[in-house]
Length: 237
Length: 197
Image (cartoon, rainbow over all chains, first blue to last red; front, side, top):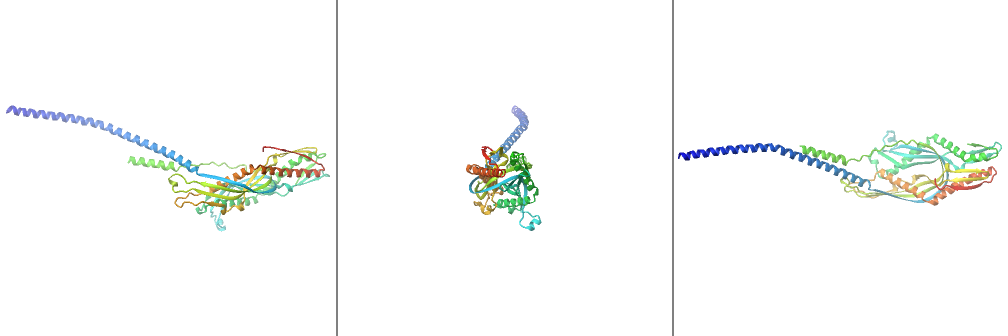
């Protein structure tokens, strides 16, 4: 009986020792696991971050490539073809001796009242060319043998051309409703009118044209002036 | 929280790059405003021009439901043809005159104002959901191309170019004969034609 009791106590102690050992080893395992846990979490976080950066880079590449592709496609969707057929021919004799290039801005108003209030519909920037000269057929040449002069009388200087390059029209629409279809033809006429008005105030332009016409005819007539007996004087008016 | 911030960053990049359309243009001022020329225009020609403009529907979310558009512009273009008088050379040797004439060229192109109005433009119908509008700049570009075509058409018309040069020759000949009458000299005129301008 006592032996049994002793045995039971021994078994109890053994069990308790075993339990203690197990607890110890469990604790050690837990400690090891907790040491491993921070390393594992770190790795996961790094992995997640890398994949997110990778996704971001991929998205950026897709956006850039896609954007370039779309832009190319959308930029090249316009086709323009044109046909021209000769209708009429007129003979002229215009000797143009000066060319003036204008870069100007015309303004569209709906009424005089709007103009006074500076209430514009739109502005249009344009490049225009003005050419002036004389009618070559109207040049009069006389020889004064007594005075030994070749007298040249030039006709009045005319404006031969006031053209607006339609390809240079650029717009700023103040009133959105004025940006309508076929506004370009209205703008073109506005620019032409504007250019015509500007040219009327350019007195110097006609003077320069006359001066250049004088030089041009002098160049043409000098061989004759020199070839005539004892040389003749050239007088151009 | 961090994931949400990242998402916003991605969305921001998409919006910025998607909206990029930088067109920075540097325009130099035109310094050659006035210059001396010596052009003898001998023919004024009128061309009947038709510009055909096609604008296809765009690609992308912002262009959904767009339709293709067509526009025609019909107008009269004017081209003046003649020669550069500064390249005309006259050599006088007693009563012998040698005149060198350059080739004729298109001196200027213009649009007949009176024949250009709203009726000159014809448009196809547009979609009311998402419009594929034709801008004034695009209309202008269509006319510019038509003018270019008209110039090419005139330049490639050999008969027209020869007629213009012939007319210049007549004017100069008349001029020389007039001088001959005044100086009581009968001039023999020799014509030489330059094949390039």
